[in-house]
Image 1 (cartoon, rainbow, N blue to C red):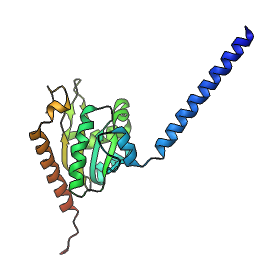
Image 2: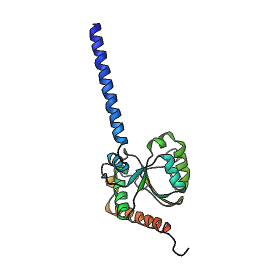
Image 3: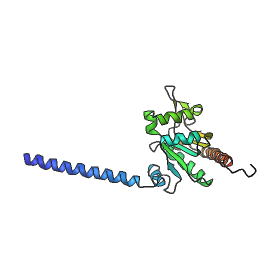
Image 4: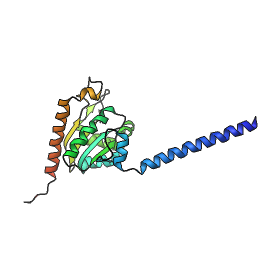
Length: 199
């Protein structure tokens, strides 16, 4: 009986050790991927030649407060985000954008981190409210910012109420309207950041 317990303990230890090694190897493998490759793993409708660059909540708040560029906030479990990034990426590539900053906002929003609170504060006049009356960053959400000034913001949360799936919501007219708004926002960003030849 003691022998069987020792054998079972040894087998359990081996299984646990192997599982731990496998998880560690997977985490190490993922950390060695480029941002584009990591993003493609989280958003499989986008290829690994994408222009998404990961930023944490603190870095994202800094970009929104005083930076320049396109900031996409979402998370991989969000089916609305999965489809939205396809339209966002296609237009950005078409317009010659070289990067879109990406924040996986899920955990920071859940714990109401200090950085999430900063993001909420920066976007305060452009936020919707949850069922309890609190301002909240709903996703998918994209902002275009120049020198800390938000020049474009798009989110579909209120418009999409009543639609069960993103596929149901995103008809050709809505896709085309979003793309036109995004092109206009990118054009403004490019104009604001063009060097002044007569200054």
